[in-house]
Length: 311
Image 1 (cartoon, rainbow, N blue to C red):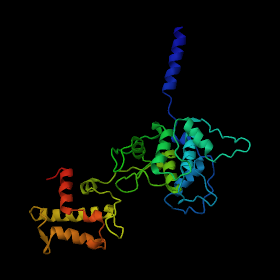
Image 2: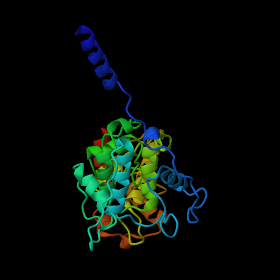
Image 3: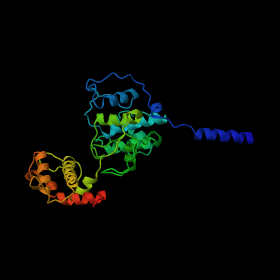
């Protein structure tokens, strides 16, 4: 009896300590990549397109890879279903329509995911970045998402699943500040990049979001358009802050305190910052949108200093 108990315990310990499946084990290369006529050598998504084809998660269309084609929720569901099948070994049952019945091509994939408790909204509509991450997050286990980044907050979401993918180096956002843009649509190239990073950890990216304090201080988002020529807050604010930092440095070198009424070449600091920024972006104040007209440089900088803990 003691011997039997020892064997059972040993077996339990063996199972409990078994190594989780790695991405390379789950997604081995099984197809020979033929290349795509519409994927140029050196294109930013070229390696991702190749990996996705080799592991069988994303193949081509009737016209090639179609990198700029926007994916539907059904197409994203098919990718997520294939990923789960590869990770778990649980096959996707392909439904057979009854006589006279026509099933949509995505039916089997959607049904497969829904049986896993994963909701698939509107398979025929265009997929958003959040919908892709929600579906992928439902099938990719945590042990495949070892963190290489330490991101605790993003400009536009605090979703735990999204942060998992950022910290694993799968996502880096749509700008230098790590903006997730949950409602933005997805192209095949963008999706391939994310999927390939799941399958091949060496493609994952270390990422530290740029300081977002200036946007918080200005009550603006990087994508906010400030001028009729399309100049955004993501372009304008860093340049304005660069000008202010330069004036602060000049004051420090001269042993004087920063004051908006100090002058540079006879021009008050406030006017210098405003006019120089307008000239840099080739606009005038008349070209400003309501967001620009409501932006006060002095109020912004005072709030910026408060947020940074300066006086």
